[in-house]
Image (cartoon, rainbow, N blue to C red; front, top):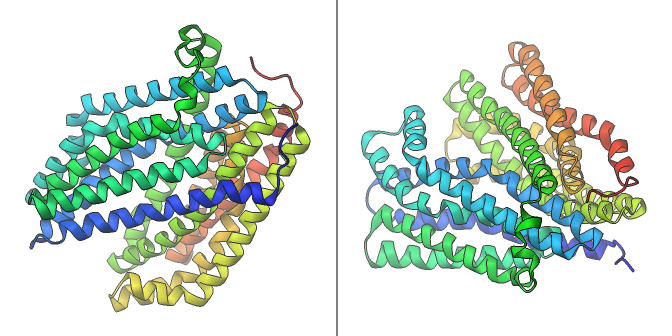
Length: 440
């Protein structure tokens, strides 16, 4: 008998993800604080530039986590343990191969990144040193995306938290040893992350050890089955296109904000950090939707699918209400903590109402992303994202000349609404898929 979908079950999935997300900015602060002990500004800037470039490149491989989560959740719902194990092997192979490609292409990637970077010669040289060391752990970093998706699909988010805490603990310990103890500077920070990511892969494999107890993980006929490989390739490609379109919206938002001057650009950057906070919380419930919707669809249980979508969305709604209240009451104080420049503070406070509204405006798009990933309706996600990007572009064209930066924020909100509406319109097709025979 299937385990009922309850509020407690949803929270058991979501809360470890929230805690894992909280640790991410803490690690960045430790990196900055450790290298900040060097009495010069260039090392801090170099670590910042190098980390941003590599994070942006790794972010492209986020499709591996999402695609693996959806497919594994459905295999779990079908009770197909052999396919669950085979999916882990496929995800690891894709991750290791993708990371190896980044290692091989590092010269081209770094040249392209620094061609558009405003970093000075000394910062660029240090950043290159940092990236040249860290990129060698790219296979591990990308493979961990697949491991996380595989664990989330089976509701093992506590293990995701353990993995994140392990990596962060190793990273922080080695930061202190290499930089403050051995005096290795920027290279020490890079070596710390390099070793943390490879140790993270080892820990991830240990947490997934149940998959290696049977023969399916090395059943090459199953792993390289043409139908299953094609399905995984299509799902991953759709998600990658969708993610690139989403990234294009946020990058264009920042670049267009620069037209209004440095103060407005800085204010927009400060306010976007609020958006990251929102995503940290909603990720937990969206990931719960991925697992529970995927399992329900795999079992062809329409009632459970609806229950999963409903309960996870209710918790998402509750979170947005808390964030809206928190931003309304404490938004000004948070801005003052984030920037000491009076002009930037004033500008950010001027546009703060958009952030107060953002949680409820973006809720549907966040939650439906999780629901559609679990159902692997990735073609719909890709197409609706493309349509939403066009709506965003039209809104920018229409509103920016009239409303200035307010128009730019309005266009961003319109893009969230467009994603929510278009995915909602495709939801009935998702439910119909739950009634069709499963993919072999």
